[in-house]
Length: 422
Image 1 (cartoon, rainbow, N blue to C red):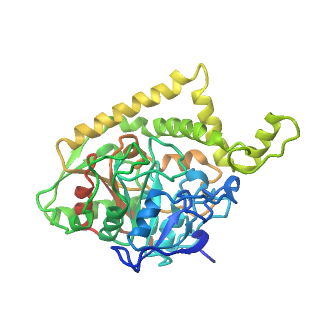
Image 2 (tube, rainbow, N blue to C red):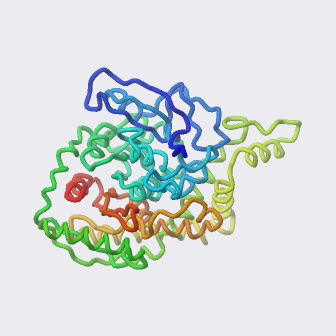
Image 3 (cartoon, rainbow, N blue to C red):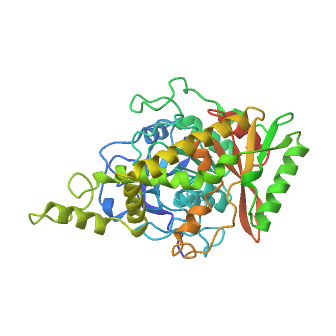
């Protein structure tokens, strides 16, 4: 079968020379490309053609890259398997009966299958790292503020970052070098973040580095995942890395806090898709409420509707303090725990995903299980830290990923550690 890695195949030529000249790149379909439709994997935007390029797309073109398509994704980034796309699921090239992870599954599948040399994904709670782990590729979730979000159709503004997916750590770092840096169109970008040289940090020189292992994020693993994780730690120790156990007691609440915050922000963000300003029309016969309802019920899929409803409920009068406010307090606690743990080590290490890639269809009828497999990735977004997923071998013929988490703007550290493995 076709992997269905792309929603739209195209050719957008870049400059004649540059660090990515001769390199093909897949761009996730929630990143604006001028003149090429950007659907976010949704019927709501099936015919939307942006009039402008996202900043990261401009930087790809300036670097000489050739964009070969808009990669398939879970609808509006809401999913962990790339099965909620209105354009059909993406298959995992390692085993086509399995999911490639999500929501950037099309980007990761394209790289793993050789349909693109590199790819851009977006990561709100693990949506780059999960598919990287499930496809045996490398994915980096940058620190919030390192990469411009201008031109990104956001799922949750305070959590989401654009980042690279590549076959190797060095290639992922080189792509991040191209897209990183301040942007006058995005006030959240760091002014002194220009001219990074992360690719040169991929030298495998890790002797003397200290790595913390959070006990709370290494429980409940599949046996094969646990075994590959321990083997990867042993490899790093053989190369001179010192490992020590650390504690992150607050991560017990991370998944709950994450979904309250993310769904609340999604409810607000997606309010603009009303059939008038954006999205498909629900038809207007004199009743605005019915037209608004029709546009959204026809344009959004089940998972998006579920998250809008839950987010609206969490923000509603009488429940804001009970849910949203408490989730934000938990987020502050989580960030504090990470900062304290990272004060004594260079980085933290966990399995990227606690399970092997599920078969297609297994999680669609059980959304709670799908949400819970993000347990190791969502805390990083809540704390606005950088993380990388690198291949850690295979179990039952399926890829396993190792996640390395660094301090804020500590991409160089996690790139160096990751390069000792991939």
